[in-house]
Image 1 (tube, rainbow over the protein chains, first blue to last red):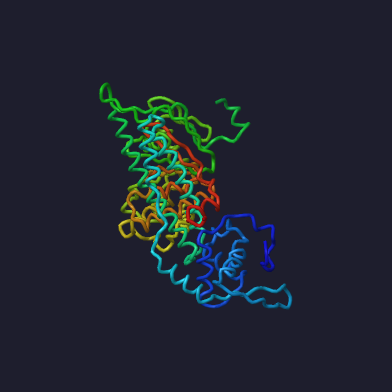
Image 2: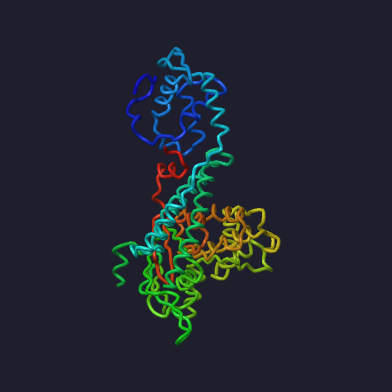
Length: 193
Length: 252
């Protein structure tokens, strides 16, 4: 892993990549210059238990990319005890990019169409009982709901990460309600045929 | 199951074999439960979900000895209970099983603490220890300051928490909860949900029949029912942080 200062290499390949990491890092730098370690800590605070699975090196790799793209600049600052660290500062282009991101109202898409078409196709082809497919999907979503809810209950009152977990819980609840409607529909269809 | 078998492994808290329940006769015959095989380990929490009429409440009634099966067996902690006399069943329900119902079923003329201590008094405990235990349980469900209130002075969520405290009064082998949040708004549901989650953490064996996904999600294991049979089983404790991250949309 090139140029990142003070990062253990072995962590780099583990965990998942944060989807909007570029935008988030730029936004976190909008108030004042900061260094990779602190940016990572702020991300971890916002994500709470979800941060555990984050790729540890992604923040540093991304900062390098942002620098090459001219969205941030960096300055190497010496420390007395620890190795030098790089302090990053947002450029004008970077700031414009942050404003663009904040104003963008696109929303991650829920995906009922794929599952809906799966059920329709399964029923039409006689390949599988749509109701059983709904049952299996429900189990999967409930396991996710259980994990999210447990994590949410473990958060202290007023935790900002708890707010994220509440979002996961509410979204899964909505999906589960729709699955109930699917089960009712396809169960009734079975009765008719 | 022979008596010796109980020495060689830990008994499940609840077990059924070939459990069936029919209502009505002839053309009006309804099979509410069909050949149900169930095992609930001691300390496990199990949620049973399914559309109304799927047989989940019937299952709970048979497990709690509130109704008798048409065929099959019900075992509670290694003891067969479906053939017990009415008298023995009533005793068993008082001592070994805690019930939580949708409609709370509190005694209107008794205060919260009196409701909670009632099962202990009926089971023959002396008043002082019964009261002490009742107050402990009210503290556990966060209602110490409501101990002297009548149910009519409590909110729905508080009444259900009193009912849960009452269900724990005799340290039951198993708690059976039938739609515990069916009458509650979402804030009260959240209080009951927290309480059920803490019961799970203490290792209380618990079976919850519910149509509320959030309540079901507090359990270790989930069974889905339809038309009197189990159609799907899943372990709810298998989620990882990584999957949670995917659900949150973190992964790109």
